[in-house]
Image 1 (cartoon, rainbow, N blue to C red):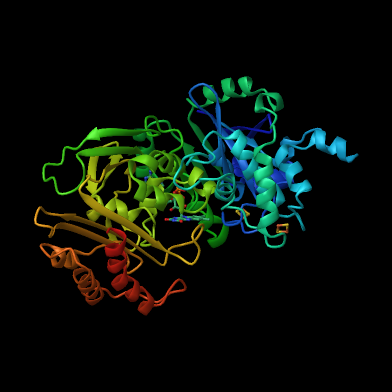
Image 2 (cartoon, rainbow, N blue to C red; image 1 turned 90 degrees about the vertical axis):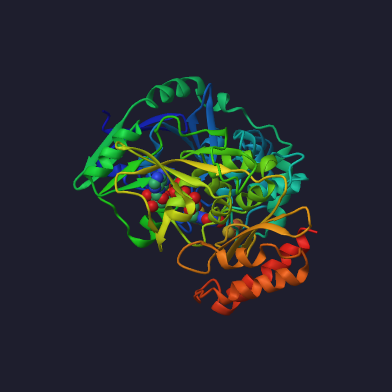
Length: 503
Ligand SMILES: Cc1cc2nc3c(=O)[nH]c(=O)nc-3n(C[C@H](O)[C@H](O)[C@H](O)COP(=O)(O)OP(=O)(O)OC[C@H]3O[C@@H](n4cnc5c(N)ncnc54)[C@H](O)[C@@H]3O)c2cc1C
Ligand code: FES
Ligand code: FES
C-alpha cells in the first residue's frame, strides 16, 4: 500500500506524504510551490478566485473539470493532474502587444482587450473558468446549444462564471471577454503537457490503495467498499467524497478529524444506470428507476437529467456553482443531511431509496426513514452510501420543484418545496405528494396536505386551502435566511404558484 499521495501539477509529478497531505491544494500551490497565480479570497468555495482544472484518467484520456482549489485537500487529489493559471501561458514575458498576444491564452487575452480586470485578484479564477469551456468536455453540463438554460453565447459564459465573483470590475466587461474567448483558439492540452504520459501513469495509480499517517492523523483511500467499511468500523473516521461540505467545515470551523477515508477510488460507483422498478405498490413514478453511484458528481447528474427530468435538472442547475457541482456528489448532499439541501425534496417526493453498504452486507433505506433528526442519519458506523435509487416521474404526474433563495445561483435556500399531483379521469386529484425543506429539522413529507388534496377538484381554491393546511402543521424557525413568518407565507403561497404553473 502506498503511503504518499501522487499527483501532477502543470505536467510535473509531485509526491506528497505525512502532514503535507492534510492541507488545502491552494496552500500547497502558493506556499510550497510558489504558484501564487491561484488566489484565495473566501476559502469556502464561494468566490472562484482559486479555480483550477483537475483531471482524472477517464476511459481513454484525461478528463478535466473546474473546481475550487481552496476546498480540495491534497489527500483528495491522488491520481489527479492539476492545471493552474500559470500553465496557460507558459512562455509569457513582458513585451510588445504582439508578443503578449502570441503568449496569452484566448481567455487571458480577451480579459486584457476587453478591460476585464481592475484589481485583478479575481482574474485568474475567471480565466480558469473560461478556459474550462475549452478544456473540459463537461464544463457546461447543459451543453452550449439547444439546452434549456443556454440559448446564446452570453448564457454559456454567464453559466460558466456563476461560481466566480468580482467586486470591482463589473460583470459586463468580463462577460464580453468571455464571449470573445469562445472564438479564440486554445492550444490543445497535448501541446502544453505530455497528456499521454500523464494518462498512462495516472491510470495505473488508479488501482492502488493509499494510506498516509501523520502523528495522530490518518488518511485512507481504499479500493473496495469492504475495506472502507472495516476501516470505518475500527476508527472514528469521517468519509469524504467531493469535500464541498467537509472542507468548508475544516477551513472555517476548525474541524480536524483524526481519520479521513475517501470514496474516490471505490469501484463501480461512478455511473448512472436505468433499471426497471421492483416496487410493487406503484404509488410513484414511471416504472423506471435510476441507480446513481455515490461517486457520480452533481454536474454529471445535471447533464443526465437535462432531458430525462427537466424539473430536477433546473434544481441542479442552480445548485452552488459549476466548480461545486463538478466536485460535490448527490451522496454527499444526502449524507450531509441539511434540511435545506436542494436535492432532498425531489428525492423524498419520488420515494427514492439509499443503498447502504458495509462488510456485513447491503440494505436499502427509504428516504422517508433516512433522517432521524437534525443531521442524524439511519446509517450505521460502518456503512457507506453506495447508490441512490431514484424512481422517475410518470407522464401523468404534474411535478414542480422550488428553491427560494436571495440569489438564483450560488446561494443557500431559505425554503424548498416539491409538489406532485396526479389527476383522475374525473378531473379530480387522485394522488398528491408534497415535501418541504427549510421548515423543520429535517426535510418533511407533508402528509396532512396530501390527505387534504386527495379527491379534491383541481381548482385554485383547493390549492389555496392546501396552503392553509400546510401552515397549520408547520413550526418553522427564524434564522439568517428568513423569518418564521416569511417561511409560513411561502408554505401557504407555493400551492397557488403550483396551480398557475401547471395550467
Ligand atoms: C459554495 C458552496 C455552495 C453550495 N451550494 C449548495 C446548494 O446550492 N445546494 C445544496 O444543497 N448544497 C450546497 N452546498 C453544499 C454541498 O456542496 C453539497 O451538500 C454537496 O452535495 C456535498 O457533496 P460532497 O460530495 O462534496 O460531500 P462531502 O463534503 O465529501 O461530504 C459531506 C458529508 O457527507 C458524508 N458523505 C459523503 N459521501 C458519503 C457516502 N458515500 N456515504 C456516506 N456519507 C458520505 C461526509 O462524511 C460528510 O459528512 C454548497 C457548498 C458550497 C461550499
Ligand atoms: S477562495 Fe473563494 S472559492 Fe476558493
Ligand atoms: S478585478 Fe478586482 S475583484 Fe475582480
